[in-house]
Image (cartoon, rainbow, N blue to C red):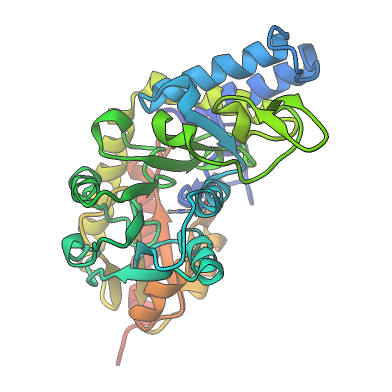
Length: 391
Ligand SMILES: Cc1ncc(COP(=O)(O)O)c(C=O)c1O
């Protein structure tokens, strides 16, 4: 796990290195990914084609196979989208939610896993229900919320605010016993947890390339083949039909029927290269490093007065606040030391409201972070703790 592989870390600000602790927002990219995209533009940027034997189509499909195998899915179960937000919007409009149906999300979801469901429920006359989450980030018993009307449950695996995880496999089992569908927002989990969609009771899994060393503008929706076969596309256009008449058209099989228009070939190539790199490092090692750094951070900040951490048993990130200093100001002070974190509500508006706060500071780790990064961060936080002490 080497910063040398990431050109971003060569940058100096005021002649000093950058400490990047905001990978939960977007990750840095290794040379391996940048070179793969460059190579595409420089050598084989022919058009994607109706002809499946075209070189570009073959490269596109080879990368689809690679990304499928990364989460242990089949090639035809991987649909390319712009990212997690589009994947969830796609499901919200294609799952045939009807009047009287119920959709469940948790109180801890990212806005992108709330708004698409809120909107479709409004339009269709369905009901959006929120599963309670306590202040530590633990989900209430889902059994209390499932009814005969529950069509779909959509939950994030790892929270991008608290860093806490839901037990997806166990929750999925209960959802399936209720004959409901289970959508997992894997945007914080797929970048650093090894997945086997076949063994996790997941029906659909959404994730974005930019959080896992890949480019922006490319994402994935995994869906069980038998479910995808019965799903309608949510957008229409070129490349998705095999026969077109004036009034009808015959759609291709999944995944092609879901990918209207010229695809983001370079995005898929970049994501394929990212998956190669992640496989080379090993997902277990990445998860181990994240957890180790989280624990180190928690240990070292335990004694800092006026600093309050949200949640417990965090996976890859920690959110906190100081008593007398806003998260925005904490972030600004750290920026001056070349330490980059996130501040705001991290698009988890509802849970910030529940905690009666407007914003929080968030640090997040990824495979290029190390103990020195934590030490540099803690050094500044200790100073802040002393300077802004409650009287
Ligand atoms: C848990 C979670 N879900 C959804 C999203 C939205 O993802 P994107 O903006 O990549 O579509 C994010 C992004 O921060 C996230 O962390």
